[in-house]
Length: 265
Image 1 (cartoon, one colour):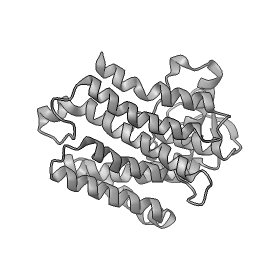
Image 2 (cartoon, rainbow, N blue to C red):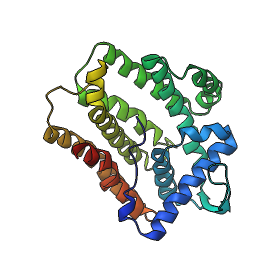
Image 3 (cartoon, rainbow, N blue to C red):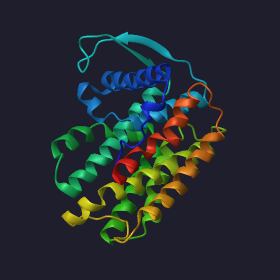
Protein backbone atom coordinates (compact mmCIF):
# COMPACT_ATOMS: atom_id res chain seq x y z
CA UNK A 1 0.00 0.00 0.00
CA UNK A 2 3.01 2.28 0.28
CA UNK A 3 4.89 3.96 -2.55
CA UNK A 4 2.45 6.76 -3.38
CA UNK A 5 4.12 9.61 -1.46
CA UNK A 6 6.57 10.68 -4.14
CA UNK A 7 7.83 14.00 -5.44
CA UNK A 8 7.07 15.20 -8.95
CA UNK A 9 10.71 15.34 -10.01
CA UNK A 10 9.94 17.31 -13.19
CA UNK A 11 8.90 20.27 -11.03
CA UNK A 12 11.92 20.24 -8.69
CA UNK A 13 15.05 22.29 -9.25
CA UNK A 14 18.40 20.54 -9.61
CA UNK A 15 19.31 21.51 -6.04
CA UNK A 16 15.98 20.25 -4.67
CA UNK A 17 16.41 16.93 -6.48
CA UNK A 18 19.84 16.52 -4.91
CA UNK A 19 18.50 17.27 -1.41
CA UNK A 20 15.59 14.85 -1.87
CA UNK A 21 17.85 12.10 -3.20
CA UNK A 22 20.34 12.65 -0.36
CA UNK A 23 17.62 12.08 2.25
CA UNK A 24 16.49 8.94 0.42
CA UNK A 25 20.07 7.66 0.45
CA UNK A 26 20.39 8.69 4.10
CA UNK A 27 17.38 6.60 5.07
CA UNK A 28 18.69 3.71 2.98
CA UNK A 29 22.03 3.96 4.79
CA UNK A 30 20.29 4.01 8.19
CA UNK A 31 18.25 0.92 7.31
CA UNK A 32 21.38 -0.95 6.20
CA UNK A 33 23.35 -0.03 9.29
CA UNK A 34 20.58 -0.89 11.72
CA UNK A 35 18.83 -3.84 10.08
CA UNK A 36 21.19 -5.24 7.47
CA UNK A 37 21.50 -5.12 3.69
CA UNK A 38 18.17 -6.82 2.95
CA UNK A 39 16.28 -4.16 4.89
CA UNK A 40 16.64 -1.73 1.99
CA UNK A 41 14.05 -3.82 0.14
CA UNK A 42 11.47 -2.25 2.48
CA UNK A 43 12.63 1.30 1.72
CA UNK A 44 9.97 3.69 0.44
CA UNK A 45 9.77 7.40 -0.29
CA UNK A 46 6.80 7.57 2.10
CA UNK A 47 9.17 7.36 5.07
CA UNK A 48 11.55 9.85 3.43
CA UNK A 49 8.65 12.32 3.51
CA UNK A 50 8.09 11.49 7.18
CA UNK A 51 11.76 12.03 8.03
CA UNK A 52 11.91 15.35 6.18
CA UNK A 53 8.70 16.67 7.75
CA UNK A 54 9.81 15.80 11.28
CA UNK A 55 13.33 17.12 10.69
CA UNK A 56 12.10 20.42 9.27
CA UNK A 57 9.50 20.89 12.00
CA UNK A 58 12.13 20.33 14.69
CA UNK A 59 14.80 22.29 12.77
CA UNK A 60 17.09 19.26 13.01
CA UNK A 61 20.64 19.50 11.68
CA UNK A 62 21.80 17.30 8.81
CA UNK A 63 24.78 14.98 8.85
CA UNK A 64 26.13 14.82 5.31
CA UNK A 65 28.58 12.54 3.57
CA UNK A 66 29.32 10.54 0.44
CA UNK A 67 29.61 6.80 -0.04
CA UNK A 68 29.46 3.87 -2.40
CA UNK A 69 26.99 1.09 -1.66
CA UNK A 70 25.94 -2.25 -3.11
CA UNK A 71 23.10 -0.77 -5.21
CA UNK A 72 25.49 1.96 -6.46
CA UNK A 73 29.03 0.53 -6.23
CA UNK A 74 30.80 2.54 -8.94
CA UNK A 75 30.19 6.20 -8.22
CA UNK A 76 30.07 7.89 -4.84
CA UNK A 77 26.80 9.62 -4.02
CA UNK A 78 25.71 12.06 -1.34
CA UNK A 79 23.56 11.18 1.64
CA UNK A 80 21.99 13.24 4.43
CA UNK A 81 20.70 12.00 7.77
CA UNK A 82 19.07 13.73 10.72
CA UNK A 83 18.11 12.62 14.22
CA UNK A 84 14.80 11.43 12.72
CA UNK A 85 16.39 9.06 10.21
CA UNK A 86 16.52 6.24 12.75
CA UNK A 87 12.88 6.82 13.68
CA UNK A 88 11.83 6.73 10.02
CA UNK A 89 13.84 3.51 9.55
CA UNK A 90 12.14 1.95 12.59
CA UNK A 91 8.70 2.93 11.27
CA UNK A 92 9.61 1.50 7.87
CA UNK A 93 10.36 -1.85 9.49
CA UNK A 94 7.35 -1.78 11.83
CA UNK A 95 4.89 -0.91 9.06
CA UNK A 96 6.73 -3.22 6.67
CA UNK A 97 6.26 -6.16 9.01
CA UNK A 98 2.51 -5.69 9.30
CA UNK A 99 2.25 -5.10 5.56
CA UNK A 100 4.07 -8.38 4.98
CA UNK A 101 1.85 -10.10 7.51
CA UNK A 102 -1.18 -8.90 5.56
CA UNK A 103 0.35 -10.27 2.36
CA UNK A 104 0.89 -13.65 3.99
CA UNK A 105 -2.71 -13.66 5.17
CA UNK A 106 -4.19 -12.61 1.81
CA UNK A 107 -1.90 -14.33 -0.67
CA UNK A 108 0.03 -16.92 1.34
CA UNK A 109 3.29 -15.34 0.16
CA UNK A 110 6.29 -14.05 2.09
CA UNK A 111 6.10 -16.48 5.01
CA UNK A 112 9.87 -16.92 5.34
CA UNK A 113 10.44 -13.15 5.23
CA UNK A 114 7.69 -12.61 7.81
CA UNK A 115 9.32 -15.13 10.14
CA UNK A 116 12.66 -13.29 9.93
CA UNK A 117 11.13 -9.86 10.45
CA UNK A 118 9.07 -11.12 13.38
CA UNK A 119 12.27 -11.29 15.46
CA UNK A 120 12.50 -7.49 15.27
CA UNK A 121 8.97 -6.97 16.53
CA UNK A 122 9.46 -7.27 20.32
CA UNK A 123 12.15 -4.57 20.40
CA UNK A 124 10.17 -2.21 18.16
CA UNK A 125 6.95 -2.71 20.12
CA UNK A 126 8.81 -2.09 23.36
CA UNK A 127 10.45 1.04 21.97
CA UNK A 128 7.23 2.45 20.45
CA UNK A 129 4.32 0.99 22.48
CA UNK A 130 1.80 3.72 21.56
CA UNK A 131 2.42 3.43 17.84
CA UNK A 132 2.66 -0.37 17.80
CA UNK A 133 -0.64 -0.69 19.67
CA UNK A 134 -2.35 1.72 17.27
CA UNK A 135 -1.06 -0.19 14.25
CA UNK A 136 -2.20 -3.55 15.61
CA UNK A 137 -5.64 -2.32 16.64
CA UNK A 138 -6.17 -0.40 13.41
CA UNK A 139 -5.14 -3.25 11.13
CA UNK A 140 -7.23 -5.67 13.18
CA UNK A 141 -10.29 -3.47 12.67
CA UNK A 142 -9.53 -3.14 8.96
CA UNK A 143 -9.25 -6.93 8.72
CA UNK A 144 -12.58 -7.46 10.50
CA UNK A 145 -14.32 -5.01 8.16
CA UNK A 146 -12.79 -6.70 5.13
CA UNK A 147 -14.19 -10.02 6.37
CA UNK A 148 -17.62 -8.34 6.52
CA UNK A 149 -17.04 -7.02 2.99
CA UNK A 150 -17.58 -3.43 4.13
CA UNK A 151 -18.13 -1.00 1.26
CA UNK A 152 -17.72 2.12 3.37
CA UNK A 153 -14.51 3.29 1.73
CA UNK A 154 -14.31 6.52 3.73
CA UNK A 155 -14.58 4.68 7.06
CA UNK A 156 -11.97 2.14 5.98
CA UNK A 157 -9.64 4.90 4.83
CA UNK A 158 -10.04 6.68 8.16
CA UNK A 159 -8.90 3.55 10.00
CA UNK A 160 -5.70 3.51 7.98
CA UNK A 161 -5.41 7.27 8.34
CA UNK A 162 -5.41 6.99 12.12
CA UNK A 163 -2.54 4.50 11.91
CA UNK A 164 -0.39 6.79 9.80
CA UNK A 165 -1.44 9.77 11.89
CA UNK A 166 0.03 8.12 14.97
CA UNK A 167 3.23 7.28 13.08
CA UNK A 168 3.70 10.97 12.28
CA UNK A 169 3.70 11.83 15.99
CA UNK A 170 7.26 11.12 17.05
CA UNK A 171 6.74 12.78 20.44
CA UNK A 172 3.22 12.84 21.87
CA UNK A 173 4.17 15.79 24.09
CA UNK A 174 5.20 17.91 21.10
CA UNK A 175 3.45 21.25 20.59
CA UNK A 176 2.89 20.21 16.96
CA UNK A 177 1.47 16.76 17.70
CA UNK A 178 -2.11 17.60 16.62
CA UNK A 179 -1.07 19.01 13.25
CA UNK A 180 1.37 16.16 12.64
CA UNK A 181 -1.34 13.64 13.50
CA UNK A 182 -3.79 15.40 11.18
CA UNK A 183 -1.20 15.50 8.38
CA UNK A 184 -0.50 11.78 8.73
CA UNK A 185 -4.19 10.92 8.98
CA UNK A 186 -5.11 12.85 5.83
CA UNK A 187 -2.20 11.33 3.97
CA UNK A 188 -3.11 7.85 5.19
CA UNK A 189 -6.68 8.28 3.99
CA UNK A 190 -5.39 9.42 0.61
CA UNK A 191 -3.03 6.46 0.31
CA UNK A 192 -5.72 3.93 1.22
CA UNK A 193 -8.27 5.37 -1.21
CA UNK A 194 -5.77 5.72 -4.06
CA UNK A 195 -4.54 2.18 -3.53
CA UNK A 196 -8.13 0.91 -3.70
CA UNK A 197 -8.72 2.92 -6.89
CA UNK A 198 -5.56 1.62 -8.60
CA UNK A 199 -6.33 -2.00 -7.59
CA UNK A 200 -10.06 -2.03 -8.31
CA UNK A 201 -9.89 -3.78 -11.71
CA UNK A 202 -7.38 -6.36 -10.52
CA UNK A 203 -9.37 -7.00 -7.35
CA UNK A 204 -12.59 -7.46 -9.31
CA UNK A 205 -10.89 -9.90 -11.70
CA UNK A 206 -9.39 -11.91 -8.84
CA UNK A 207 -12.44 -11.69 -6.60
CA UNK A 208 -10.41 -9.87 -3.95
CA UNK A 209 -11.75 -7.35 -1.45
CA UNK A 210 -11.99 -3.70 -2.45
CA UNK A 211 -13.86 -1.09 -0.40
CA UNK A 212 -14.93 1.07 -3.35
CA UNK A 213 -18.42 0.77 -4.84
CA UNK A 214 -18.27 -0.92 -8.24
CA UNK A 215 -20.10 1.98 -9.90
CA UNK A 216 -17.85 4.74 -8.50
CA UNK A 217 -16.93 7.39 -11.06
CA UNK A 218 -13.62 9.13 -11.60
CA UNK A 219 -15.20 12.40 -10.50
CA UNK A 220 -16.42 10.87 -7.23
CA UNK A 221 -13.02 9.33 -6.60
CA UNK A 222 -11.27 12.62 -7.23
CA UNK A 223 -13.52 14.35 -4.70
CA UNK A 224 -12.76 11.75 -2.03
CA UNK A 225 -9.04 12.11 -2.68
CA UNK A 226 -9.27 15.91 -2.63
CA UNK A 227 -10.93 15.83 0.78
CA UNK A 228 -8.17 13.64 2.22
CA UNK A 229 -5.39 15.64 0.54
CA UNK A 230 -6.82 18.97 1.72
CA UNK A 231 -6.86 17.72 5.33
CA UNK A 232 -3.20 16.76 5.04
CA UNK A 233 -2.23 19.99 3.28
CA UNK A 234 -4.04 22.27 5.75
CA UNK A 235 -2.25 20.60 8.67
CA UNK A 236 1.08 20.79 6.85
CA UNK A 237 0.75 24.53 6.26
CA UNK A 238 0.37 25.08 10.02
CA UNK A 239 3.76 23.47 10.69
CA UNK A 240 6.88 25.68 10.95
CA UNK A 241 8.64 24.13 7.95
CA UNK A 242 11.05 26.19 5.88
CA UNK A 243 14.18 24.22 4.98
CA UNK A 244 12.50 21.62 2.74
CA UNK A 245 9.18 23.42 2.27
CA UNK A 246 9.26 23.50 -1.56
CA UNK A 247 10.09 19.79 -1.81
CA UNK A 248 7.40 18.84 0.71
CA UNK A 249 4.79 21.03 -1.00
CA UNK A 250 5.74 19.46 -4.31
CA UNK A 251 4.98 16.05 -2.83
CA UNK A 252 1.68 17.04 -1.21
CA UNK A 253 0.26 19.16 -4.03
CA UNK A 254 1.60 17.31 -7.05
CA UNK A 255 3.58 14.14 -6.40
CA UNK A 256 0.93 12.15 -4.54
CA UNK A 257 -1.43 12.63 -7.51
CA UNK A 258 0.93 11.00 -10.01
CA UNK A 259 -0.60 7.51 -9.74
CA UNK A 260 -4.13 8.88 -10.10
CA UNK A 261 -3.13 10.72 -13.26
CA UNK A 262 -1.42 7.61 -14.64
CA UNK A 263 -4.57 5.59 -13.94
CA UNK A 264 -6.64 8.19 -15.78
CA UNK A 265 -4.42 7.89 -18.84
